[in-house]
Image (cartoon, rainbow, N blue to C red; front, side, top):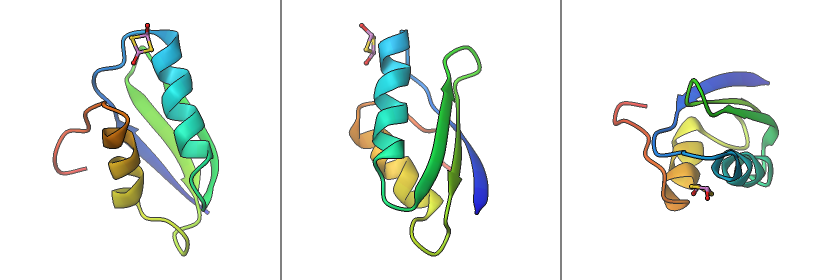
Length: 71
Ligand code: 9UX
């Protein structure tokens, strides 16, 4: 398993955090996800053979949050 720390912008309440965590955890290949509202970071544990960081970023963006380019 690999670990990624993905910066997420645009989360303003605890329900945002729950939305992002839920979407990440529901992504095949993701084995764990913790999102911190204060730091704006999503810590994701994933199987790199099943899912890529690019895919995780896409999932977060599709929810309506921003991930700075380059991540
Ligand atoms: Mo809270 Mo976030 O009311 O998308 S859920 S702002």
